[in-house]
Image (cartoon, rainbow, N blue to C red; front, side, top):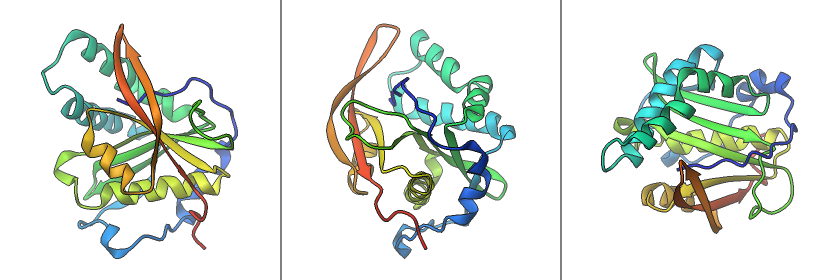
Length: 212
């Protein structure tokens, strides 16, 4: 489960976001490129519905392994409803990149510029709040490309470190980030409705992420 720090500095000018992705061409090996025909773009307000539904599906697949209980259902509705995602899209520090195949959204990345965490080294940081890939499209390189594009977008706005939190029970996600240069900085706790979950704080310096 991803927890986010409420302390957010407004360091990323929102007026630049529309042109950023088109100017970024991250360099990654052929093996990291998607195995299917996928396009990537910056999200727009109209994407809130599909982002919310896709996020709900991936979240429940990952975390509702014992079924649905009221606290988990309320957590989903609070943070992943269309209205909740619309509010995130309007946040000047938020960045969303979506991946589409044949007009269908299959994945997205969400990051917040200026979001800090006490275990993350000082400097300009961004939090990768979510990187969700619909299960039929996992292990095709889509998540890797989304991650590279999110890192490149953050680096182009002056971010020096990308960080995230990952639930200790999601071993596949933790292994994914470790294999892509993210270092485990220690534990943090994600809390909702008096339920506590251990997360790991992972971070990566973004030196050299801007392609020329």
